[in-house]
Length: 286
Image (cartoon, rainbow, N blue to C red; front, side, top):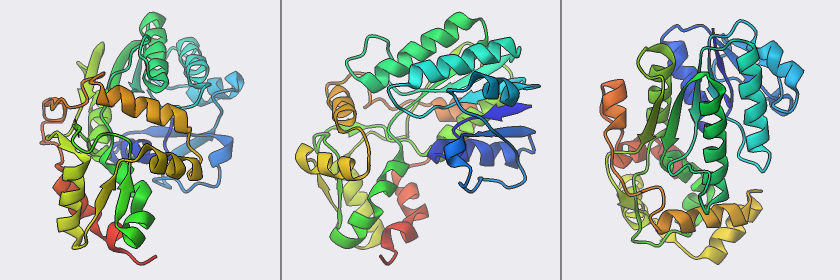
């Protein structure tokens, strides 16, 4: 039995889908606040549990051999993932695949990178076999801006327009996770996951414009991005801090690695393919 946490999010959904496609027996952990969220696959076993409720974690982990760990990125993340790891240890889980971030480091100037680095250390010290997945920025993050792209032809970030990044498709993250959870030889590995090209957001805007047949521009104003993040209910300071860290070269975000090919034996998805696959989302009516 494999337990999947974070199953209602962008990457967790892909892990559930791809494991289901392999006919793997899985259990999805749903937090109480997500009970009304539609499961990625209604045929998958589910359990209601909370990272803050140790007893519920123990119930969720009963009979589980492997687990995919993806907790919400909040100030409580390290405590919550530590709760999970300790409960998994007591449940005799054999292998945990942790979804982390490119540049994870307990000493990082970015709080997001630092929290992931701290939890990675807890997992390493637990004695449970581990695999760390450290993906780059997700291509699917562009879907945050579908309304702005449809109405105004614009999306935002605070990275310099020329700053290149190895954007990765969440479907590739799901493929690497699925391989790590179902195949041998991934224990003790740290996988840095990128797309096949290092692209600036200006290049992303150009490709998106050509694909959807509409001019799309990139707005790198920190003030405009902060307004967008605040409206979306995200932690403005942490996201801007992460962008500054990435722009400085920390985490080597511009790297282009062959991890997806090496682990899954198939080529990673290019941004042009992502844009084509999601063209209806970007072109749809408001």
